[in-house]
Image (cartoon, rainbow, N blue to C red; front, top):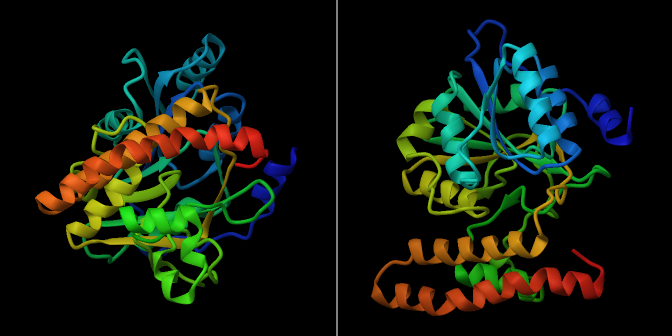
Length: 311
């Protein structure tokens, strides 16, 4: 057993669903694209979870060996439903395809390089009970060493907060702290709390809420679609929640896709998001003017990482 798997087994179990209440069926939707060796362990963690009734794997593109393993898994495990043949349609569209085919009353969207810890699904599902619609609850994302990963709980992402946060200015003065987007260094709550933005690496929604919101916006190809979904849930008067006891380990960086390509799509998505939520002609004009700068900053990130050795 490797170190990551040992951490998963050793994790403290999260609260489970009340045995007196009928359990709502759960479908995990996983979009796969050139994931690499992490995929096998991620699938195993999902299928080992007793609260998972169905696993829908949307194969946007895999190596021949991976594709064969997925096909074999779908044949031998009746819980696995494999969608193939549509090509690389992007994460948002792929996730919507998976959700449309899923049979569960609750939908859990999970990255293929993320490993569920014990009780994660149960905690997410239980938190939705009795919540007003629409509601979205995300888990606590951990690095391989057990530290909390950046992006799991975030503030409202606006052009100003993004600039202040990414530049480090939000941390310079106490009065600017409200612009800090990343909250992973804040004290960990002991129960689920509202957070404007959670990570798309693992979150849960009731099917009817997902349908009410219209699913993911397929105008995003890769990245920022989760930010957009959280924003639309809040715009609809719903809740976005961060659950500190629904834990999973997220490796990240396992895909064979070029980091430069990934950051390019992230920049395109972020620029689109700022334009989409702009109110009024002046704000929209500013968002359009900002778009090239956002894209340049995103593409520059992997080049800076290569020079500095940081990510």
